[in-house]
Length: 65
Image 1 (cartoon, rainbow, N blue to C red):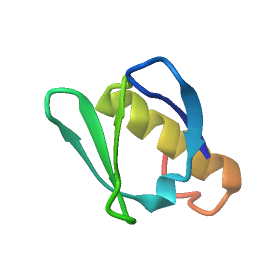
Image 2 (image 1 turned 180 degrees about the vertical axis):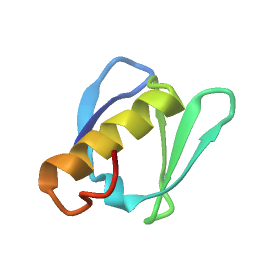
Image 3 (image 1 turned 60 degrees about the horizontal axis):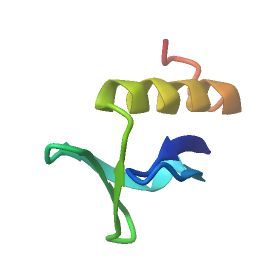
């Protein structure tokens, strides 16, 4: 799970494997596989870094550096 921050300041964790796409509208907007949109404060680059770190942590994607 990765930590994200809603625009109102609430922090929570989401499963990055459930993210279908990330858009800038101008806020960072996650489209989840469920069809739900989640708007977060983190930049796209920050989200990608967190996702890569998570995937390294779980050990399933050793070729990602």
